Length: 468
Image 1: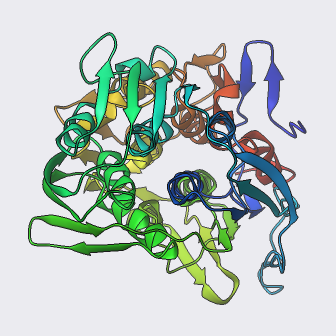
Image 2: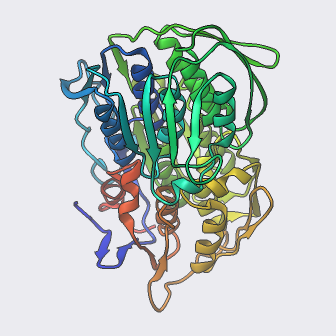
């Protein structure tokens, strides 16, 4: 990895503070859409070419799962008509080179083969993959076992298991009810009416909506509680690309069985990943152009750019280029927001909050305690470790802008922060380190879960951009 001005040490990566980031970044493809393409192909049982799938730890685990289930996963070659990356306006030059050259646009060909009668699938700490496969394999004839790392075993899947059982699924929780490891005897789900509580995770509903497309009859799903609704909208868009028929009802959704894989499924850029270079520009007063991000995307984390605008950043969309430019003004203001629609961005906002005038209040995200880490506790712990103030509430965080008017000076020794095994904690703390001198991110490899090029991209944005 070209570390640029990032200092790689045996115990982590030291973030240089005081630079204005600048350059162009092509964020990685969407993890959420890649997972949905994989599971819908599995349920349809038809060949599919996925253009620009995310190549990261979580999606590699899903590819391995497909292979264990009898699929061939082949290199499909380069995708056609890959767009050239947009450039900054010549009248507004930006110091420094692009953060990364355009990534190779490649394809994966998913080809169904002979399905084994039984298989064990390891999900690591990929919660989305795990929940999607619980439902998909419950609807797939065979004997399946799902398990993962110890942290995955702490992430509940109980509401989804209850709903699937109500549709005739045979699922045994081997150690603790509602948690992995699971033993599943798969068969076609029965049609009918079911109630699903998705207040803990929208992934429960997305998983059931997709699996219901392979049921024997119509499935009506009553949803009395739902968080992160934009992710369900993303699922509905993906389902429509597979010819699925899902309609909203007064109480939830009605699913009519039937799937037909398209010839290709192209994955757009990941707004969740794009949030980090965008936040870096807003914090440092820099300017970053993000490519491969359609303005009309249904990804929930697109809303983080609107949040940055509310905090004082300038957001300029280029719909014709599928790009957006984020410019920092040098000053941020605090916000009070319910982030239940984009919970993955809670750590990102929390990392900006100490530098924003006022007190930032984050609400509506108690379920962050059961992500890859307890993200609320982790951000409080690590913000305090770098000298900021933060408090955990019942459903969020309170972070005063202690450095809004005067940035902290260099500490006598590096301030080591622990990502708690969580990719989003690591990337958010790296952003904070651009303005808080001395931040050393330990175990930096955790970003491989969703954004393998993160450190390379950040180094490129810092480049030779000069002082802040």
